[in-house]
Structure formats: C-alpha cells, structure tokens
Amino acid sequence: MSKERAQRRAEREREAAALAAARAAELERRERRDARRRAITSRLPKPPKRPAGLLAQRRRRQNGALLAGLVALNVLVWIVFGEWDLRLAAFVVSVLAAPVFHTMLFRRT
Image (cartoon, rainbow, N blue to C red; front, side, top):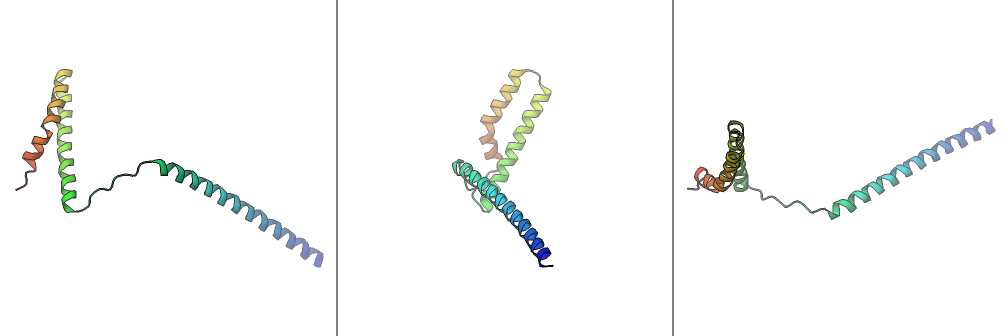
C-alpha cells in the first residue's frame, strides 16, 4: 500500500513539476515579449497631447466640417469635370481659399 502511495505521490510531483515548468516557460516568453514591446515603443515618438475643453472641441469640429466640405467639393469637381487641369485648379483654389472659407463660416462675434 505504501509503495502505491509513493508512486502516486511521485506521479503527482512529476505532473506538478511539468505544470510549473510550463508556467515558467510561458512567463519567460511573456517577459521577453513585453521587453521587446517596451524597447520598440520607447523609440517611437509620443503622440502630442491634444488640448481639451470646449473651445478646442469646437475648433476641431469646425475644422472637420470645413475639411469635409472641401473634400466633398473636390470630389464633385472630380466627378463632373474630366480635365486634369480643372481638377488641379479646383484643388489649388480650395487649399488657398480654405482660410477664407473658415473665416466666413466660423466668424467669431
């Protein structure tokens, strides 16, 4: 009886050792992966902090609306006119006129 108990205990100890080795190997792989990730991300530039608040949010919304309008206008010109010089001219005019449009549309009173 004690011989069987000793064999079962030895088997349990072998299984526990195998599980511990697997856990240790997984932990080591995870640590190496995290170290690689930290090494790579430490070299990347940090994204700039965006200003928060109501004024910054309103400015982002206004700039997005202006950009969407100009893109829609350029897509419309692209579809309607087939000549490349007109397409390029419309793009250049929209880029140059964007500050004027922004001033006219979103004038501060």
